Image 1 (cartoon, helix red, strand yellow):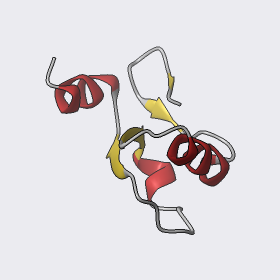
Image 2: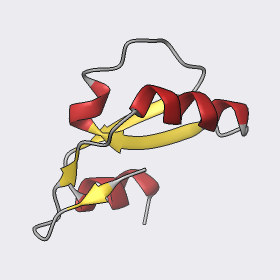
Image 3: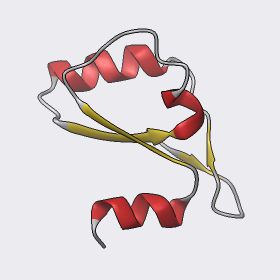
Length: 64
């Protein structure tokens, strides 16, 4: 679900609410999304949603 720029920043993704609903339906428990999208979420989800600003932060959250 993430888009990454050349400098490693995580860019905003379109239709995030729709994507998260689908992830819930598919049985996902955790999603890493752009921090900019997390601030704009309109609904509550049964997912553990982690917002990140750059690719290094995303890798760190994954424990890699």
